[in-house]
Each structure stands twice: as structure tokens, then as C-alpha cells.
Amino acid sequence: MKKYNYIDLVKMITMFLVILCHCLLFFSDNPYWVVNADYESYGAKFLCNILNYSVVPVFVFSAGFLFQVSMQHKESSITDAIIKRAKRLLLPYLLYGLLWLVPTYTLFDIPSYGRPEGSSLTDGYKSMFLGMFCDVAWFLLMLFWVSIIWIILKSLLKRNRLIVGSVVAVALYFATHYLLAGISYYTLSQIDIYIVIFFMGASFFWIADKTEKLSMPVLITISVVGILICAILAQYAPIYYWTLCVFEIVMPVVMVLLAMGLCKLKLQTRIEDTRIYKWLLKHNMDIYLMQAPGMYLSFRLFYPLVGQNCALCVILCYILTIALDIFIVLVLSYIRNGLHRLYGAVRRENV
Image 1 (cartoon, helix red, strand yellow):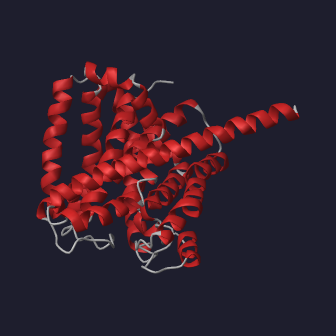
Image 2 (cartoon, helix red, strand yellow):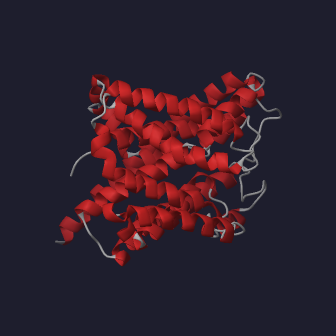
């Protein structure tokens, strides 16, 4: 199977950017971000508008691309594919919510969307099982629903049916946008635009080989110009909804082209061979999930000390969040590997 290094790279870049975005949200007065500073920083909001509306679309675009890759190498039934997606997305959501999200937020009494301050452990679990209190794990639920839609409609992802597929994707966008907008459970109200973006990622697979042949300067130039245009659009996205849609559709393509250009550099090839890069790539989703509650605790620590200096506070929160995040994932990896070895030893004894 061909390895698409630029998809790995764009996921890696986006993973670090999403943590930065969450640190900026403390100073951006976002209605979905309950914990905020007592003032809003224009600089933080400017950057946050760019990142907040791009990181998730990039993840979804990459998921659509990799879904198409898997379809070329292994054809499975709709039932088997849905079960596989449930294991990959719903099971981690349940384990994360049961063992990490609810206990840690209750222990430190961290308010979040779907979890008011002072909520009990029972209230937290109830809200989590209803898909209302998800925090960063909302992504898993959203991607599950979007994946199910395209598993059912996977015949429309074939090269000769992309025109029909694009019409269906747009129709599904409008249907979900207007019919599911009032549903607050299981992130169903947030899947609309991601249906289109997932389709775009799957469709990009068919032109990826031709795009890869473009030179590094061309790819970098196109992506930089695209990022500058998107940066301007992002400032109007919170006001004009259709501007937001255009931004969320264009930005993933721009980021993938940037990663494609960077992968042509010799430096990138050397980085890919390092143990650190391979470890980060392997634990990409773990790092994404385990950033909380470290980011909230970092903000609680630094805001009283340097909170009036937004840039310094964000930088310190970002560094500490990543450090805590990686430490937690290292510990979890050690425990997981130990359990696998124990399970293997038990199986060998039984045999």
C-alpha cells in the first residue's frame, strides 16, 4: 500500500495547531468555550478565527482521503465497515469519557460546554452518555456520523460517480443543516459541512498522484497564497455564515498542498525517520484527546500570574499543555503495552 506522507504530516501539524487554538480560545470570548479571561485580545481572536475554523476540517478531509485509500485495498460490507468505525471512534469516546473526561473534570471542577460548574460525577456521566458533554472528544462522535453516511453511500465515491456524489453531498449538507440544527445530542447538529469536507477528501484521492507531480515551489506558493486568502476570510466567518463555509472547504485543500510541498524537502525526509516523529504520528489521536484538562489547569496556573500579557500567557499555557499531554500519553502507552504483554503471556500459557 502506498504511503501518503503528506497526509501524516498535515495531521501532525494540525494536532499541534488545535492545542494552540484551544489556548487562544481563553482570550477569544467564544460562546462554546466556558472558561475565559476577563478581557478579549484582538490578536488572539484573529489567530483563533483562522485555527478554530480550519483544524477540524483538515482532520475530516484527511479522514475522507484515508477512507478512500482503504476502499482501494480492501472491500468490506457495509455492516463490517460500520462495526469497524464504531470500534475506532465510539469505543475510544466511551473509554475516554468514562475513564478520563468525566473523572478529571469532576475532580478539578472544570466547567465546559454541557457541564456546568459544580456538576457531580453522575451528572457528568449522564451528559457524556447523551453526547452533550464531550469537550475535545466531540470530534469522534461527529466523524462517526459522517463516516456512516459515506459508508452507506460509498458507491458515490468512485471516480466515475463523483459528480453525482458532489450533488448528493451538497443536498445532504442542506438537509442536515436545517433538519438537525436543533438537536443538541451526539453532535448531530454539527455534521452538516463536514459531510461535504469528508467527500472532498475522498475525491482528492483521485487527483493526488497528479498533484504530487507539481514542484515544491509551486505547491508552497499556492498554499501560502491560499492561507493568506483564508486568513482574511476567517475574520468575517463568525459574522457571515457562507464565508465560514467557503473557508472550511478551502483551508483543508490548502493545508494538504502545503504538507505536500514540505514533504519534497530533504529535511522532512530526515524528520520522518526519527523516533520522535514516528511516536507522535502513532499517538496522534491520543495526544489530541489527552490535551484536556491540562489546558484548563495551565490557564488556571498562569492567568493569575501573567494573564494581562496575553501572548506570554498563551505561550506558557501551550508549552505546559503539550508537556502534560505527552507525559500522560507516555504513561498510558506504558500501561497499554504492559497489558498487551500480560494478555499475550496469559494466552500462551492457556495454549
